[in-house]
Length: 593
Image 1 (spheres, helix red, strand yellow):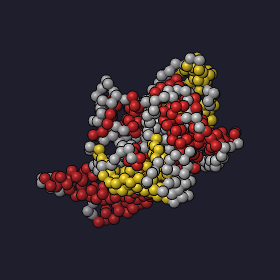
Image 2 (spheres, one colour):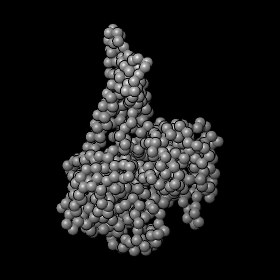
Image 3 (tube, helix red, strand yellow):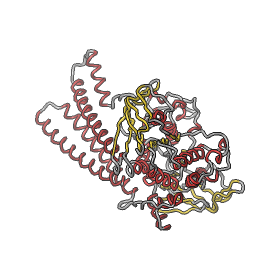
């Protein structure tokens, strides 16, 4: 059964085309993932697919009698209690238990936090689908506000559903699994106002197809850009050798060539070179933070007791645990935002804390972006401008008020504000929420080079496995234990102790079915590969600099012998760069496995 068919669909904002000429047909059983940078129109496209928003151009046709359910990023629940919204069926009980909603049944919906409301709405959609109420389900960031065990249960549930599934998510594990274990699958990539469709048959991963195609496209664009700059350098050298007195036309050509060599403007809305994050840090001494027999309680509710924790310089600590176990409370105590009920918190004198919490929505909507980064006591300077540009805030965006930003752009802005303080202890509470995949990968690359200490709580397995080398696991009873290695190692240890995999735990909890064993990482650790990647990237930068210098020198030469000598040297430099790039690619593939 065809659920929805769209053709020639386009949507624009006052000064920006979100996408144009999008065409896709979704039938029962299909799996469709929508990916793209923040602000590219992913949520807008989902609303068009559900019929809640009409496109500017194109046609949208729904199947006769098609039943569609959707989960929005910020769902609004009807008035009443959670029990009133969900009901008391066994399907509700299974979903509510697995998603951590059961304790909320007697709460009124208007007292729930955003994360609690989203879990309730998700439980409602999944329970109704279990009863066969839907032909197509549309989910916008369904893994936000879920703990790791709930995410694994959700994946297993979505794999088995018969309805068509359309989703937006930054969870790469979920994307890969949901576009490979069932099919046919499609990834709709929104990029610079255009839509690219990447399709795969059942058993193949559309997400992998998308990654391959995108890598080829980026490489092709990079080669075209490199050729454009080489030609511009030659023209620039030729123009500079001309007569001192120039007409308007040669002067314009000179400026144009110089602009291309310096980077050149790109079409509006197109994200060009990869995001390069960088920020200074304050020198960090030998002592960072130590917790000694720390206890925290709220009224009669004890969150955790007698916690001892030492955070050393250079620490990379992932904090994991079920929702409500006290992860954010622990981060607040480490950051000095909260005083514990008992125990001692020792913080080094040179520690400068940068804390990106979950509350980017609290930013003043009327303040201009660049002023927010500079703070209330000074004017924005060139460092603020450079930092914003590294986070893809171009000049118009820097002068825009916060209310004009999407949720993901606000999250990026919050990270800029934290990094602008030059911290040496970085604390991140669910930093991947609302970030697009490009920014997420760039943030991971930035944290690879982060010279300070890092403490991060996240439900994103790929992110934590990339950036952390120790895991602090908190259970529902408030006890904690520290495990060396990344999240993959912790999941393996937990599975070994229980005798079953994490997927098994989640699925059996809901329906008694066993899941598939989860593969574990072998070979070099993520931190070792990260260091080797950084070394290779530095070598590439040096090799590219040498290649650029030789290319520019070649453009200035007229003597045949010198041209031959420098040309030969240029060939050697190109070969060296290719070797380094191949080595980098091998390391990058290792990191992704």
